[in-house]
Length: 495
View 1 (spheres, rainbow, N blue to C red):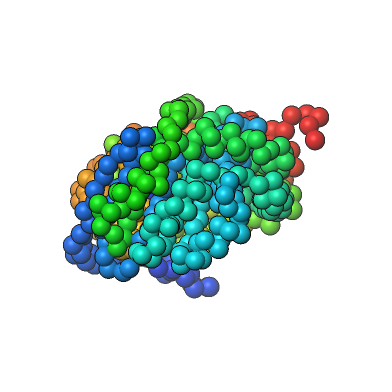
View 2 (view 1 turned 90 degrees about the vertical axis):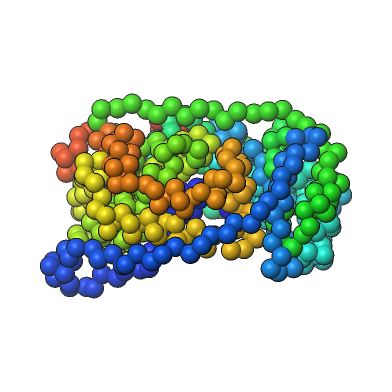
C-alpha cells in the first residue's frame, strides 16, 4: 500500500531479516563476535511487465498493465487528498473522508455497496496516508466493467451518511482513548509532531479526541469536493485485461468527471540546531522507556534516494543492522531496534527507535547516537555493504509478483513524478551504491549531533542521568501533551 511506515520507508524495502534470538546467559565473548554475513547470491533476473499510459481529457492519468497469469484484475486509484491538506483543527478529516467514501453514495447504501462487491467476487478498501488517499479494488477479469462502475460511484458520489460518520467517530474515539495511554503510540506521535513542528505532516493521522469530536458531515463533503478530483488522481488497472478494453472502460466510468483545482503540498523546512533537542514525555507508570530519535530526512524523489536506502539498511534495516547488533545483541539494551525514512512528496522524518528498561535509557540513547555517528566517519566494510545491498535488491522482485504488488509500485512511482525507468533501474542503482556514497550521505545529510530525541517513560528515574550526558530536556507530563500543537503543550486552562 501507499501508507508510509518507518521501518519499510516508502518502497517497503527495509524489511526485517530472519529473527536472530539472543540466548539467555550467553557470554559476552559470544555476544560480541563479529557479525557473519551470508555469502552473496547472484540476483535473479527481473522482468517488470510493460505498461501503457494515457491521460483523459479531465486530467485523470490511467495506467494499464497486462498480467495474464490469473483471471483477476487489481485496480488502484490514488488522489492527492492526504492528511497534509487538512487543517490542524480538523486533524483526522482526511482519514475520515477516505474511510467513509465507501460507506454510502447517492445511489447506494453502505450495505448495498458491500453486496455489490460480493456479487462481483471482489474486495474494496479505501485508506488515507500523508500525501494521498487511495481506493483498492480487486475483481475477477469478467467483472472489470461492473467493478469500475462501482469504484466510480464510490469515489465520485459519496453521501457520507450521518449514521456512518457517527459510527466512525465512536470507533476512532475509542481507539484514541486507548492510544493516549500507550507509550509506544505517544512516542511516535510526539516525535512526528516535534520533528515537523507546525507542518501538517506532523498531525496525527486519526486526529485527537478534540479534533475528531469537532468533525462534521459538511467538513467531509467539502474536503471530498475539493481534493477528490480527476486532474489530481491516477488509476492503475493491472491483471488479466487487454489494454484497449481497459482504457475504454475507464473512460466510460470516469470520463465525465469534472476537473477541479490544483493543490500544492506545503514545503517542509528542517529546523537548524547545533545540539540535540531532548523532549521527555513524563509517564510515571511506564514500565520502560520508548525512544525515538532523528531528524527531517529526504523526499521520495531526492537524488540521494538509493544511498539513503543502503545507509538505512546498514544502520537499522533488520536484524543484521548495526543498531540491532549494537543495542540488542551486544549490549542487551532492547528487545528490538530499527530505523527508517518516511519518504513523501516533501521530506518526511528519519526515525531510529528502541524500547529499553527505564534504568538503561541514557545508555541506549548514547549507543544509538554513537552508532549513527560512526557511519559518517568510516567506510562500511565490503562484506557488510554487499550483504545489505543484496538483501535490498533481492527483496524487490518479491514485491512485484502479484497484480497488487505491481499496481502499488507503478502508482507509487507515478505519484512522486517518476516513471517506469525508476522501477526498472531500482536494483541496478542499489547495486551501484558505494561505501563512499554511504559515508558521504551520512556526513552530508544526517546530523546525529543535533538530533531530536523523544523519550516517553518514567522521567524521575532517568532524567538526571540523561541531562548530565546530553544537556537539558523539555519535560511534558503525558496528560498535558497536545499533538495538535507544534510545541506539544496543551495551553494552560485548556480542558
